[in-house]
Image 1 (cartoon, rainbow, N blue to C red):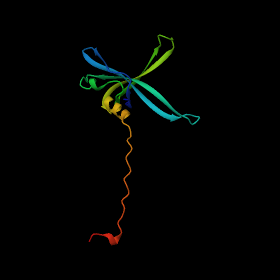
Image 2 (cartoon, rainbow, N blue to C red; image 1 turned 180 degrees about the horizontal axis):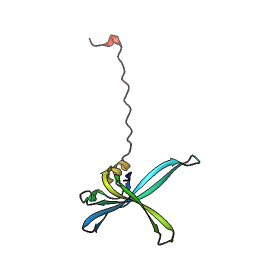
Image 3 (cartoon, helix red, strand yellow; image 1 turned 135 degrees about the vertical axis):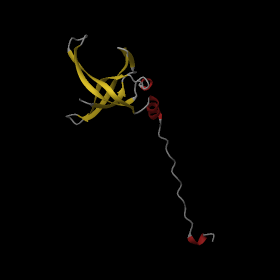
Length: 135
């Protein structure tokens, strides 16, 4: 068995389908990778993985676009001929066995809108001379 683990963001809301009496939830996950290219310039590459989660209706309402997830499952690669160009293409698919929500959409929005508020500096404390002590 081959096992694949991914951390990424959902590309769109989950789509529910019924297949032979079972419920399947399909959603794409974008996995971003940052690296330095041959010229030493910071670059980013996104890999899309089509995920399917079977018979887990309780988690479906939380799978909305932009949510960060950790998924683990069995991968497979499918080759197909593109309808638009006629070229041979491929897709990476993952049958999800384990899923964890790492962030919620509201948390991501809140993090993006929080601004840094400058903290005022404390006034320096002036020390009194030893002979002016009240005792």
